[in-house]
Image (cartoon, rainbow, N blue to C red; front, side, top):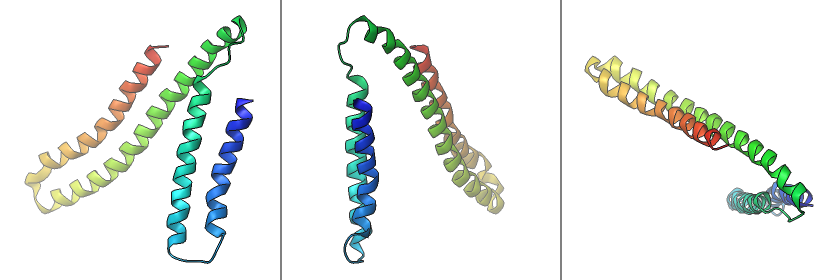
Length: 140
């Protein structure tokens, strides 16, 4: 039952901004309004889905046995999301920082140390994400 409700809300959240964008006359505010509708629908679906994930009906001993599998699956999904999203963020940050560092070094070779510090700070994002995923998997 929960899956049907979340799937319906997700379909409405995906179709709502598209319908809202193409409805009415074209103007400059149409894109901004569609973005607002998209953000509000995404946040509401995310909150309702998280409520449905953590609320389980009291069905007896059979529900308690299945909850450990769900917790294990949620831990693996969470660890994968943390590692993947931190790696994507690191790639974006390193691409900007490294290109700026190369430009700064080409103008003045004394800026090498300062430039490498900024690149290393960007690399730290991936290390923090990996540590958090180890912490998540350590609790399972």
